[in-house]
Image (cartoon, rainbow over all chains, first blue to last red; front, side, top):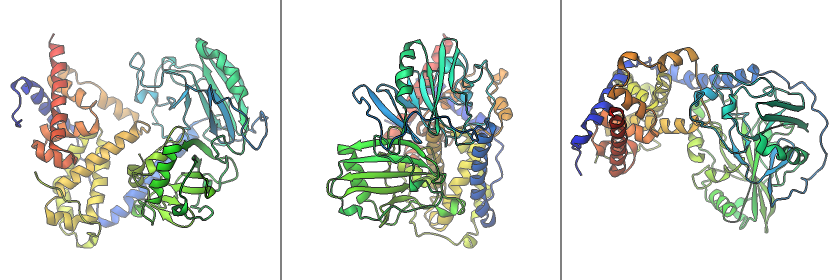
Length: 378
Length: 178
């Protein structure tokens, strides 16, 4: 094959050349200033801008965090018995709830839905019933989407992009709008809200899923440990970097399971569990092998690229259950420009491609973060 | 094929000694931003990508300059960053100001339905590595071997990216002729 174009393709090639030249000419290049003095300020400034954006989003919502949560459905130290044949459990903060097994996890469209869809156009969002991911750390474009949208308390997203789903709102968070518990209907859709523990469950159903309302909401329980084995409140939620009780992961020969527990680092005075998953068999063994073989020293870090007064917003606890070592916790930091790595309390190990991507599964997702660990973990 | 050597990690440089960095930046910055703009379709993102790529290149300036691989290194960094950003943007969308966004996306009536319009519409839908291959081929006029170096992929992959894009556009153009 040569580089000579096929004559039949000449028109297409010319079209590409014309289009790219035209678009390139339209750009007014911005001034680039990478002088040493400037460079030290650019990245912290960018990080600060992101923080302001996220904070601004929080303030744009109706603040309901001061409302006291309503009565909990039940108290208990352990998760309820869930019929795992037909349902799966999902956990958020201090609540575990059973959902139909075929309800997958997906991102619910947000107030910026029009950045990826337009009324009458293709639907880029989930169309089958799902459980919404925690959107706390998902940035939302600050744009005003204009279309006929449903009335409150329904999401401000056109109904054509809806699908039945369960979502969670942390009532202690200032970014969560507290709704009145109850039921609302709109064009054949029903939104049922119920507060359990520190969380408000919000279940949107259509006629086909109306029968799921009571089984789902009635299954909700306040727990201190999820069915996967995650504590709903963990020391890893600390704003500062903390270390787990020390052990040596290289001496762990085998694991029967690994609970993957993702936390919002907001302090330890309230449940901070964002999502959880359970790895077993070969998946768990692969994570153990990946961590054991990762270089000692932690990272990847790029400390020159961000504010050293901040320390990230998320952490993961890997709770290893081992026949020989019992239950051990490994802390994982992955979303900041320093402090990244696996920590068994004895050594910090580097996030590697052989280890990090394996822990982001099911309800535990990578929202973003510093580019170096993101490239390893995504 | 040219080989782009990854600079050694210890090839750091005291910023004060990079006397030819800023002249190079002044000369090449606009072209790199245009390249990044074609990858992202967004001028703000383009400037950010270039800034990020240059921030990575700067500490390695001595070794890059010495091996004459600055341009390819920075282009590769831009492409990689655009891929990472594209992955993130499936979940994260940041828009500074809706007003210019509306203007930028408004169609140009005079140019409606031109082949170039169809081509740009297609470019905007391509996955980032394929989009980069198309830009490098038809804007930068690079040979497939050079494209492969920048994209860090086999030459056959670079060739495939471009040919599939051409085939897709040809189909679109022929369908609009009907």
